[in-house]
Image (cartoon, one colour):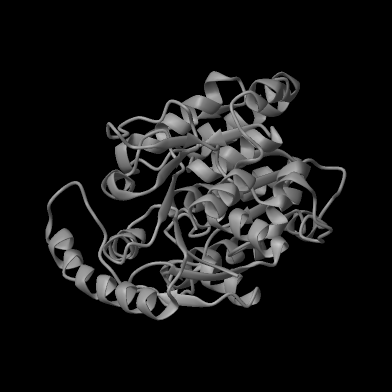
Length: 371
């Protein structure tokens, strides 16, 4: 049996690789990650809940975030790094894995540094167009850096790279039978709104103001997240309950959606309103579903802005800056895209030219090669 430790903050591609490993039955998998969605929040992370349901061992790592700018929070956060390093070193000594597979993010840094000291082979994967700060550090001592895009920026000289694409879960490519989209007036098109597993307060607040207008023309599935002690979910539920009975059933708000259901949702949606994280972008490209993207303004190295512009450049969607986002602008953009939806759908072939659908298989091959 090959012992594999998977770590990092980008859970979606990690889960795609885990799905492949589980099918082969000759791997022992352990995940190093965070138990809570956010610091100071009691909500359990999506990765912890998902992997617990799969009976995969999960080790909690408490560590500090790397920041490019210096602040009091940065300094306080760095004091947690020795804790994360000690935890990682102890767990790796105990487990003795054959290989580490990292998916970036601040949790991966102490794990990979510990693995390097212990001479454990490391494979790391970058999801974005611009190499993240953690991967920029650890790429200098990994066996190979896997890239989602051929033109990834800021890769250090001398680092061995492989263009694998971004691992996509099987459920994105094949629809799961689920009743999550069985609600409301089925004659109306499905509008999927999501801010990622944590949700987006900015998007949630705008949607709350236009729910009645949207419910006249669409069925809305809204994944709002469970951060901030579920305040957004509670507010959106109140907005739903204030609707007339004729339209109330056309709006469904959910805190978190099982990863296995996302493929079915995307394939049945006529339009997606979302942040522009790398994994979301890759799933949109894979399915070819038109999208309105609202990039997170403070995403590292303007990553989400570039992702959104990629979708816009191939004709698959539109971008709205958060600073310009208003209820009327979002509503009018949705209505305009609905009128021209067939034009956006034609961009699916261009989307297929950008991605690789066998990324997870390629990373499993690399695991076999370096373990």
